Each structure stands twice: as structure tokens, then as C-alpha cells.
Image (cartoon, rainbow, N blue to C red; front, side, top):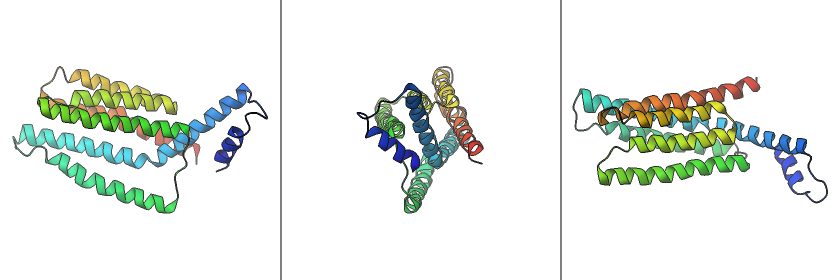
Length: 208
């Protein structure tokens, strides 16, 4: 709360005292650090949906390719049935304890993933209408959102993780459409879950 108070006081006194380059860099660093803490505290959602996506991908491949089941999409329904109520319950419990602190970087971060969600919805609708696999397009969108998030947080593993999604999108050109879900699963682990775990570990190492 001291950091928020300090930032507000500085922003309210631009005419009385100019900021030196060192002070400006310090404020930027503190703002990014606060955003990292907030993202880490919200990391539950990233891990929840990340592993659910991996599970749904593997489930679809097993049902569709190994068992030749017409109900290969059931894994995605299970993902929604588990993920939505768990995420809502977590946020409800979290909101009862305290409100999250927000800043400019945090707001930008949220808008990046909001734009991703809208783009994802449009992409899936288009893929259904044209009967093409949406996975290569989804991987490109995830890679872009992940890269921008890494830049905002100044976290290089997250920026590097974006390339796993882009490479995965290219890999879809070389494999059968049924195997696209396996590419998506591998890309999600390497490009998102691993950097997310590193971000959490970095936070813990600095707050022990």
C-alpha cells in the first residue's frame, strides 16, 4: 500500500517537482514489480486452465485416434465443467479476503488477454464455419499474447515461451490434423506453464 500511496503522491505533484531520470526508472521498476506480484497472485488461473487445456488435448487425441470414438470432444466439455466453477469459486473466495492492487502495467496486461479472448472466440467460430483446424491460429494468438505479456512484465522466459507457440503453429503444417492437439499440448507446457512456474519461483525466492 505504501507503493500505491507513493505513486499517487508523485503523480499529483508534477508541477511542483520534476522527476529525475533515476526516480523515473525507479518508479517504472516498482510498477513492474507490483504487476509481477499481482500476476503471481492470480497465477492460479494460468495453472488451472493451462493444465486443463493439456488434459483436454491428450483426451481428444486418445478418444479420436486410439479409440476412434465420435465423442472425442468430451474432454473439452469436461474442461469447461471443471474450470468455470473452480475459477468462479476461487475468485469469489479471493474477493472476500481483499481487493487486488492494480496499476498501469497490470491493466495493460489484462487488456492484452481480453483482446486474446475476443480473437480466440472469432477464430473458433470461423474455423467451425470453414471446417478447418483452429489450433494453428490459436497458437499464433497465444504466442502473441504471451510475448506481449513477457515484455510488459520484463520476464524473458515468458517472451521466449511465445516462440514455443509459434513453432508449434508451424509444426501443425507438417503433421496430420488429428495430431494438432498434441502439438497444442506440448506448446502449452513449454510456452506457458514452464514460464509461469518460473515466474512463481522467482517471486517466492524474493519473498522468503
